[in-house]
Length: 483
Image 1 (spheres, helix red, strand yellow):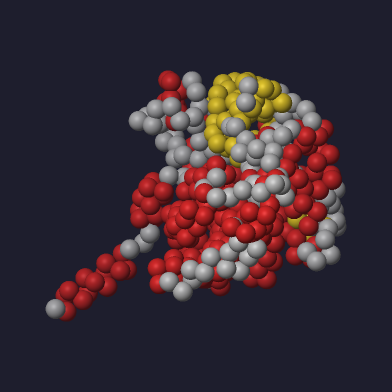
Image 2: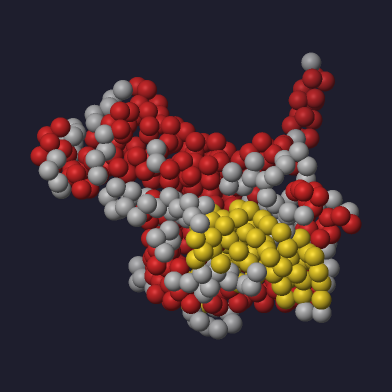
């Protein structure tokens, strides 16, 4: 099957039978019609349709090396600088479609699978079958254009002990049985974004494993279909309130569901396993395969699109109400501009300094991407703060579309106009600002970006410990010796 259309994506989703618990009800069929998912799945369908749009298909697809059909560019194994640029352009095309608000589009995990499959020999260290399994699985996802998500961490119960020790080791997803055909998984994991409407669930390593016998049941990497028997999702309340796009311009389009994943003795066939019982293999899963680098390449491209959107939005806001001439306003705008140019510079540096990794994959330089992923979670928190400050009390007075066209229409035109916009247009703009910085959707976006790669404090510790500072210490020491 070549790159999917939106219609094909929705048809496959409609035919699946995932077990989703949401707001006290069980959903297991007709998921594309459910109020919590119907708008966001159509936004995802639009991304698949872009693959067939004459304006974008040359960027968003390439020719499959096995089928000869056009497949998604995010599956492309880069062997040249030009390949990296094409991948980034494809990431950007999808990210621009949602202003960077969709954080789990397929290109994120596709990038991981591409890198993992290229490093098949890394997995073959434990068992040659694992290397073949990851390679064949990548080809399956590529040729069927499947939408994958993943789940990483154990339930948040008692942070004072390791996840594998929660409730005596009875909560985190673990291997409880092995038979001639595979393994049985029991327990839970979090947090799986878009899980209710993905095609496949990737269950990958996350935390560092010590390699003790107690850690062995938690040392694994595998994939299961979204509607595998015994797999359940507990989804949070939807932030799409089934309101018009005018009133909730972002939440009514891009509200990605997040879910806890419950494994109720889910059987995973061996052909879907990529690592089992090997803590060392799991600990090197991302770093030794360059997977984290290619995933971050996609993420920094997406956050660049999100920052461009924020700059455009704040510029329209300040022009609309005539405040751009004030110094403190210009200072805030300058902060967003600086963030944008910094992200662009990180991407440019990562691609300019790219090198072939041990498996012949052209891989962006890690240092600039790692800097970006450590900075952006904090930098993004400023964006809604700036929008709230500049919009001020005007964000409290945001009538709905029904008001704009109802009995209050004349008053809205008279009293809610701005320096550059008529009343109705000003309301539309301020609804977008509101949905970017104040609404429940906006709050979820801020939280999501803050913890995208994990706890920023722990990330900072890992960043410091992994950064080679010896040359800089030596430089200062040499200067001291000259004094």
